[in-house]
Length: 351
Image 1 (cartoon, helix red, strand yellow):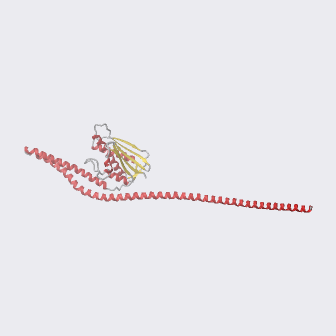
Image 2 (cartoon, rainbow, N blue to C red):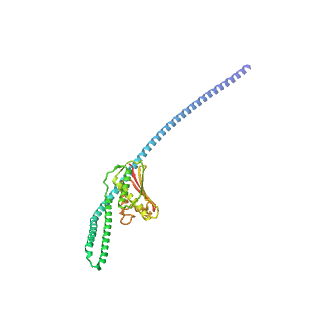
Image 3 (cartoon, helix red, strand yellow):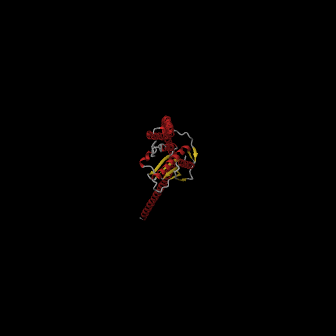
């Protein structure tokens, strides 16, 4: 009986021990399996991190290359756009020159044809007036008294008519000369020029030229020329003609205002200034004269258009000036208020 109980306890203990061994073995296998899984996940995570880093580096490299390529393409686009603009400007300039050359040939031909008979008209008007005056001195004293009054009247009318023929003949002559000047294509070479010196020289040339024609003419001149103005590559004679035209117009405007309104206290003045503005030099010519009516501002650059009275302008000065400035790659603009004056702005490129 006792032996049987011992066997049972032994079996129980052996069973429990076996179960413990199985449990421990299972736990060892489970832990080992979990460790392998954890190691696998760690390796997988590390691989993912490496892949992410590699992708990030590749993306950064690609973005850098894209930025560099974009900058290169932008630079190339700017160069191409600049070249295209230069080509368009050159094309427009060539077309303009071709048009002006064709028009110039036609105008020059017409002007030369008019010039010869016009010279005869002017010369014979002067000669006829001189001969008639000599005839008056020689023959009129011998006329009967009853015819003298009528003869003097006829003589006065003929002299007056000859004077008018001579006056308008000279005006026609100035128009023809203006046409020839307008039609002439400049062949002058560009040279680096101090625009301030040129502006000052032609301002005084215009003033003293007008003073020589009319001793009563007077106006105040102001200069505000910039000190940092670089030398400009221009044809000095052509730009000088532009400045002279604008100065003459300005002096004419202030003189007209002084004559039209003698009752007001008015100091005729013309101001010239220059300044550097980016890639351009601006030359401004301002007067405090009569100004330009608003309804004709868009016509002032048309050939033969003038607001001056008959006999005082050919209408070619501003047209010629506009073409010269355009040929230099610049612009000629005007701002005006009727009764208060006008300001012309010449814009010339530095390069």
